[in-house]
Image (tube, rainbow, N blue to C red; front, top):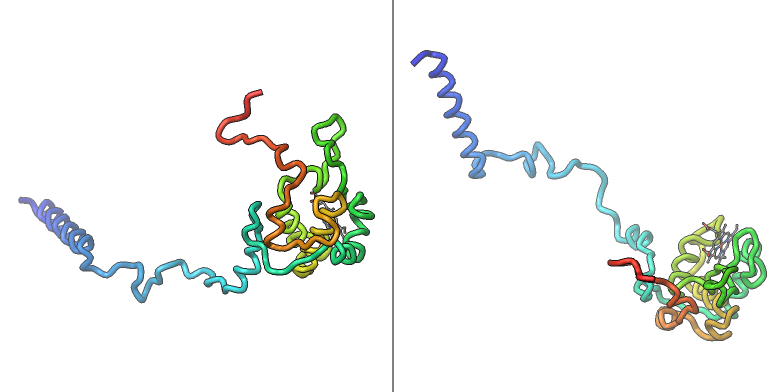
Length: 192
Ligand code: HEC
């Protein structure tokens, strides 16, 4: 056997031995060893308070609604102070858009799309106001204030009665006027 051939054979035997030892876990591996940390070492675990502050989505069925409550009387005060400048008297519209009225127009030639005439779930109103409004200072309202604002805006169209308590229990039970005005496109488009 030539020297070159002997060399190649010895090398492949050595590679095979290393591969077998590695496969059997008998050689040190990169992950978890002191020299190489398990992950890329970026970031840190998010603290519980941070996760809670970001995790504010409210499901249509009301899952995630916080404790607290409000009535239209509570809400009308807050509305006048922080919302009316953009959304007008009783939500009738301004530069921030119309929030109330228009019920029954969605299926007409001249639809007026508002929260009260169009949105399928009242729970979304809590999510939206708490998350995004007032425009210049989102997430500055207390949960009680948001419940009050929801009660007030819905009361303008008598979706809730004046004085009715809106909270995590009552809000998911409110039936929006356009609740059945949506079609289900999944898994198949509707047949006309
Ligand atoms: C500085 C002006 C401004 C203020 C103040 C303001 N809004 Fe708005 N609001 C807007 C604008 C602009 C939009 C539309 C945002 C968009 O479509 O992205 C909006 C959208 C909304 C919507 C969604 C409407 C829809 O049909 O999609 C709701 C609900 C709402 N605001 C409620 C409130 C409430 C309640 C307050 C008071 C806490 C408030 N807003 C304060 C400007 C404002």
